[in-house]
Image 1 (cartoon, one colour):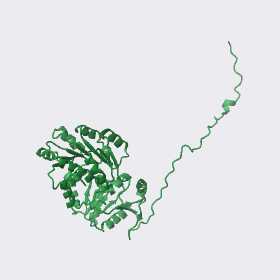
Image 2: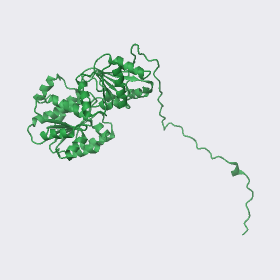
Image 3: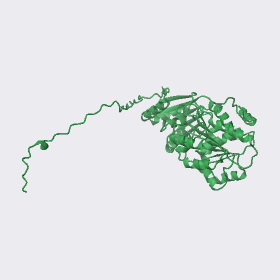
Image 4: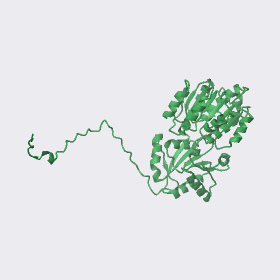
Amino acid sequence: MDLNTRLLRALGKHDYQKPTEVQVEVIPAVLEGRDLLVQSPTGSGKTLAYLLPVMHLLLEQHGRKGGPHALVLVPTRELARQVFKEAIRFAEFSSLRMVSIAGGESYAEQLQRLHQHLPDLLIATPGRLLRALEDETLALFDAQLCVLDEADRMLDMGFAAEMVEILDLLPEQRQLLLFSATLEEGDLSGFANERLRDPVLLTLGSARSLPSQIQQKAYLADSLEHKLALLQDILGEGGRSLVFTFSRERCEQIAKQLQVRGVACYALHGEMAQKQRNRILHLFSEQQAAVLVTTDLAARGLHIEDIGRVIHFDLPRSAELYVHRSGRTGRSGEGEALLLVEAHDARLLGRIERYQQQQIPRLARQGLEPKHKEPEFKRKKKKNKETKPKLEKKKPKLRWRDTKNKGKPKRSTE
């Protein structure tokens, strides 16, 4: 593709030979200077789809004073960290200056980095960026390129007012790229209509389904102890695995149970200090820990290419969240999304299948076959109001006191 040679050199070093579908569509449109509204499913390569052309444009205009010249706004510190890591990776042969600021980390250290040099590219979460703007540590007068990554999630998290405030501080001549997992939400459509200027609309893949390289399997379990036995057996196959649970307490509980059973693993959840979370993620990404037990904290923003399987120890509260969780695997080849399903999870499993319009095969592991069958639930058929027979009006009830002879009326004495 028509990218700066320093970027192509970095792509070659990391063995990126062929762009993904979203990269083929997005990169030329960004280089043309167009606003974009992009729906792209998880795991499709969208981070590089916007980073590469943004970095190309920065390299072509390198040497300008001021800054930042490009802004990437993300909903969470984990995603900010991952995007920054990718940017550093592919700017290896360039002199681009990049800084990431996000909540949960030392604000003083972030200020120090900003004071040392204004970055060409700034990656930030909304709250921390606004704090830096209010402190007049930086300004957005020169930020002619702005990316809103996972814009749908930022709206869901209540950042609409912050996003509007930040966009109002951009220069008049600016290019806006909006990426989302889905374009179906009304709030997102309204936001995009107000902020984007004659955008290119790209809908790539279905936000409701997983990439074809991810195999989905469901294992029925009779009890919590049975689920733990299944989990231990699956993890015994080796490889890097991500295990999802529904709460912080459950995360700690399952990690301890696995450790008692001789499985080396770490727990990761939102109640941990940011430094501890960063350390655990580093150990996991460097394969010093092959198993990570986590909450939905890691359902988005965790980009580690060789996670072999995602295990849903606890099924997610929504089918959309299942897709985001499962998208953590299959990023550099084949992957597995495995569901451990107790009887009370059967309705959730049905919801996931209806959402994807795809049935997930039920499998059993040798020696750990379930004793109970999967419960069946019949969906209630919605009655069509138009075909519903009209009920005849009931005749008023005739009461005896209304018909009895009450006698002659009294004569008037006047």
